[in-house]
Image (tube, rainbow, N blue to C red):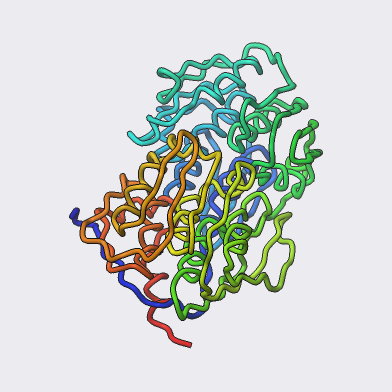
Amino acid sequence: MKGDGITFHPGPLCGELDVPGDKSISHRALIAGAFGRAQLRIANLNPGRDVRATREALVALGIRIEVEGGETTVRGGALREPGGVLDCMNSGSTARMLLGACAGAGVRANFDGDSSLRRRPMEPVAAQLRAFGAQIETTDGRLPVKYRGTPEIQTRRFILLAPSAQVKSALLFAGLFAGVGVRVEGDRGSRDHTERLLAYLGLPVDWDGRSIDLAPGDALRRRESSVEVAGDFSAAAFFITAAAVTPRSSILIRKTGVNPTRTGLLDVLREMGAHIELRNERTVSGEPVADIRVAYAPLHATAVGPELALRAIDEIPLIAIAAAFADGSTAIAGVGELRTKESDRIAAIERLLQAVSIETEVQPAGLTIRGGRPSRAQEIVATDEDHRIAMAAAVLGCSAGPLAIDSMQSVDVSFPGFAQALEALQSERV
């Protein structure tokens, strides 16, 4: 085991907790703040390494960002050419969305990232931005990427070949920073955080889950604004699933974002028989927020189709773990893109469940899990330095542990302090 490996032990989860600010919204709030001339104050910005990559890249592009206590202030202005390569670390959101912002602003930049990010596709966003007029060179469709300017804006109407919140957002930021209207079609209910944020900040954007229209607007340039980032549902999802599969568990997760484009996991778990309740539902900075109560209940198998899988794409490893404890066989379809996440997550799911003697059948774009009684793992599970796989292993260990993984370092990408938060819940009793 590596020096930062860890063993997760079985035990119920009881008590209340807060999760870090939403990572997806945090990226977008920083970039939106960079566009404005007036300052944007952001509360509850995600503290992970991915969001730090966006923050440091914006500073390299000439944007002033100050952090004091729990508030981050972005003082926007014209982007400028950075003095070196923009290091996107492990963050695909940073690379793709800032490429859009730079293409709109016409600011030349080189983008790179760590070895994991270098394996992830950049050509889908590069191709769309080339149609916009941007001169972009990828490295065999991946990072490093060179952006050499936008001599003339061309296409302003785009059709997504596949639903992608990051590609869609890159095009919206390109239009925003260029000061031109854009229309994006072909979406199928991917995350709408960019649309909600721009609308909340007073910019003229209309969307219906299939198409988005953004007109030029200067609301961010005229007045100071503030954004409170909701708790990250993807972070809460680990505790939700752990409580759902671990006997005698009962938890409350406060102030969590429940954007319907993100909460497919709740729909799947409820279909499987989980006890989940949303309390104190409200809207915060344009995003739906609630307190989530979860209690253990026996689960049964279900079928997860492509549209539902899209709303739970980051939580597919957790759905697979819930399926491992469910009575019957659960089929999950339309998740081929998991092959190109921070790791090959389909292979990681299969490896994780095999470690506890649960049979998994893998199809080209899906998988079937035959549920039952996961057994104690007899080996150390490899995480491939993927933060979601490391935390998913912790969830599995809550009911089928002890379970050891080779490394916990990757979790700092999105949720520093995850292991401590889990331990605190397991140490409480109702």
